Length: 326
Length: 291
Image 1: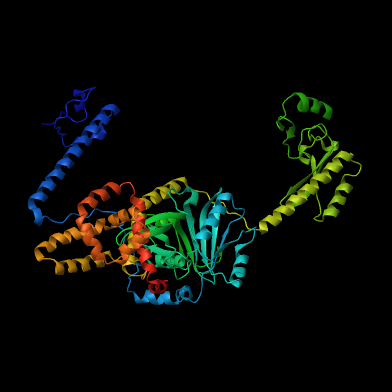
Image 2: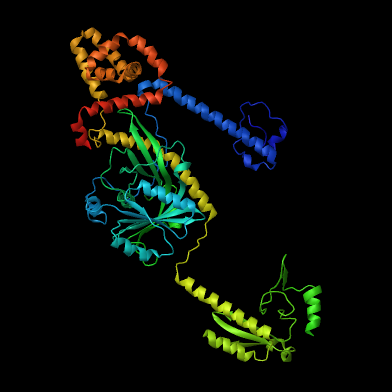
């Protein structure tokens, strides 16, 4: 039985909601055609409830069927996640790819991975850093072994770089600041290595982290790089790996993690302890921040004449919600 | 006449160039020499007046005389000043010869200030400028939201723990961590199967495992009561003896450990770990190898 003609049908009831019996809307009826807002809202809620009931009934039915079948039931469907639905990137690195392995053996990080160079990092900021940035730099230098913080007083980066190379630094980190909070990171591998420019967000200093442990010690931490799948991701991952000395000191039980998820790189610094063979406890020390890659440049930092390997072009690259580049 | 002009505009009636603040009056007129609203600085109330203004980096001297008061288009006479500072000052003097001292002095002052700020502009443009980029609000919000969702999806703690356990399994840590539990399980099961009857073997295996799990708690119980030296003896003695002792007291210790664990959970966890380290001290060679 229908409920009377479409838009006028709701004239039957005003005010209080009637009993929740099974209501059948005539097929041409659409809730959005009712002009009166109150009634339309009411009809919409009723429609929603009906949908929910139907869904619940369908679920129950499916569950019963599944139980009835027992072992012969088809396997449960995997829920769709953004990671599942990710658009396949053709530059995804296959672990056995020889070409990639060859490339990586001969690129700028080869001396690091062949243990010919020891990383030495210079951390600096943009002009006139505020307190928060200064403290962040200090904490970052405790996290990364063999790193030094120097303040810039109006010096141009292009002039700093040759000096750094002369003094045997392997990497340069510049933390850009805006309105008293750090918001950008430029990571440059020095002897003409690639330069990556990141946008930095949600920076938490040590005192803002809850349940943190004691200060990070001088031991060389381990490094975990998660989810760097594409070629671009691989090169960025190697850049991060090149910041830390090759041989971690396991006595220190510290681990620095760069976890890539949907193009956001989360950095965490933990101390771990193995409670048993299957359980490990971790305690967060150290600052935390998230990075988003903005551009990757072939040579050292040069904004005008540099050769860009990858720039994040918003109009082209942000069109699909399932497409990620790292 | 200028006096009348001043009486009306300056003092009583409205002047559109005048800006009043709590302490002072300013004059917004572009030809004003000092910028204040005074009887001597008002370009409208003085029929003989001069200013220095700069355009595109060059300074000009503007002059107004009574003779041209009737011709507004030709009212202000403009003279280009030389780029050389001293020469320009001389030119000002030359042009304003026989003019009131106040105007001459103020013109030169203003010219000095202008050259100073022009120099500063030129110096600053050589240095690096901060590029100000406008933020798009919608995009900022979208990025923030996506970051939060990515954080939730990442499940960082789990990922890190998994990775660490993987590394432990792959023996990247070498011999530092001695977790013989699995090995012990197997070894003990084998021994139990050999020494006891088969019918009881399965039962006792299960009991073994229970004991394994509670083994740590039970030992901690003992360490609470006894000395460290006693613990030494307990540890250095074979595990089998211990386990046989504990089997008898299993039920009693069962309830004990159950009662105790909720109180001292984390503290107790550390005890077994320390014990293991203590064991290692008796084998210094392996530790140095690993390090």
